[in-house]
Image (cartoon, rainbow, N blue to C red; front, top):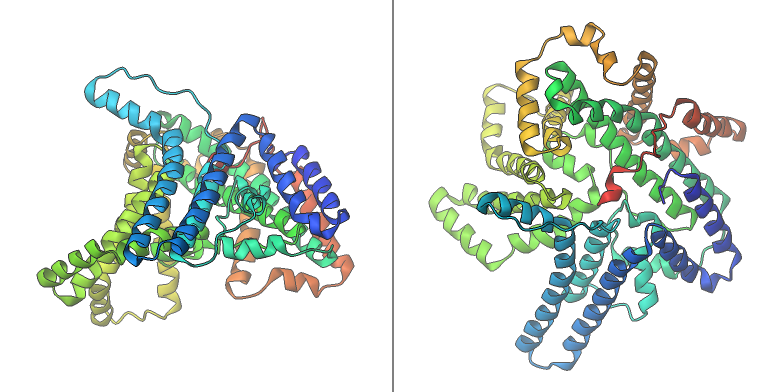
Length: 508
């Protein structure tokens, strides 16, 4: 069930009405029913994988807690609990790995050894990466003793399957969501108005910006041998618009729909194209994935015994300052290798992850050198000009990474990088050839106006101005004029793709 279908909107409306009509004590049960009905609409057979994750995680968490209470010996208890944790992680991440990466592994084995192993023809369950990571975060937290395991299976099932976030994220945390699911909610007009604002803004970014920019992206990257120079560069810039509008727009819809039920989800984007470094970019882009990686991969690696031994070794070789940074840099590279693999089963995603990891590691290692250069060249780090330059530099580095993210293969990405450099001429930007990429002149104007509006609002938000609060202070007629303008902009200016144009990250 696509988020941009009339079917979905009717489903949400019916769910909201029923949610507030039933007795308050049954609200969370209705949310669970709606969630499973929503997921079943994508394929009843896929419920097996959702149930497998839910049952195994629920049981493993209780088992870990019971082991902690029943075994007196501290060392034996720790070993036993760790075995249960590892079993739970292997089962769930193993299922994800088989479904998502088996064909990639088989293809590479066949290529290396000239084999003829048959690949599998199966559909990837919708949102499996999101609900697997969310569930495993819960299991690790229970193992660490952060909170008690959930006793009620159905309440835990709701945490795993809450339908607004099932396909897009954000990746939630149990301690923040479980409390909200237990609370009884009453209908609130102001909250509903805010939720609708968020949903409309998300649809605007998706339909007016992302799907329109995606036309050029599809044309150029699906026929990459036919294009070079400025045409490829424009397609990459369009992908920046498409991906941000699609993913952040989808998250806006998710957060808005959840807000209709009185549930507050974590923010997943914070104006990432205003980032001043790659590290800052990943603090603003897909925030919940970044914090998940930091909490459950980066810190465990950084604080592990083998990394501690490695750190002592590097301090002896390179001195205390550099030796202290090298293990952190290595941990970052490992984390972003995992981020790359999370994005998909292809070498291009592995390179994409390593590219980001190496840039962050290099920035950490070169920080002392940069400080010396600032002094030598009298660069004021706090000046407005330097701040703008850092934003532009980061934007360019991020856009370079998009070659690997959007290209059909690693070979295609390298080909297009070369084609951009060797065939670049400014003439392509002015001779009208960009109008042969699938968009008419009016579409470019609509896209430019939409991006200008997004930029203006983002600047205000970056300055700490809340658009929601500003709107609420305006007279009711003016507020509704803004809402109506946004609503009617969707059918008038939205670029409606054949087949509905689903969200990119729904495939994860």
